[in-house]
Length: 154
Image (cartoon, rainbow, N blue to C red; front, side):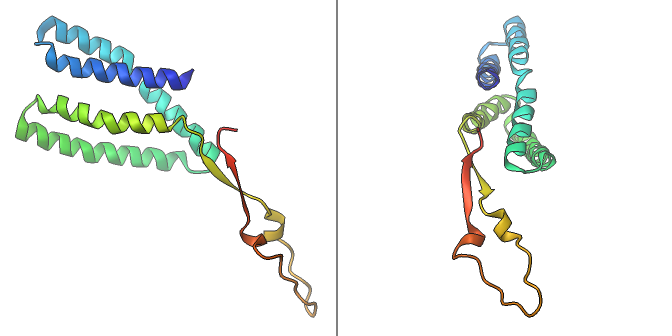
């Protein structure tokens, strides 16, 4: 259910934020902004939760995920600031709408099952070395590189 709430919050808050641009200002704009923030508030915690879940499944670092998210925020804040200075305040709505398309695509990809490599023959990779004077027998062809693929959603 969290995936559906994430997707619903993302879509509804994006539509409401873009609707602020077309509202004409005043009380309708304020009401749309409040509704956008109310529906968008759970999005960041859901994304963090999903990032933690994926990092646990794949063995990646949650800290690295947050680092890259912060770096991207910093880079795109500079770009948005330049656009604001050059094109005016209204450009923020167009940029937000344009950047929401790839964000929606990435969010939809979060629900897809991923293949995670699992070592199939780990004991063969860490076999003890033969004693000195004994002949070493190499493992079967391909045993050192064998990998089993499992779905991350299991």
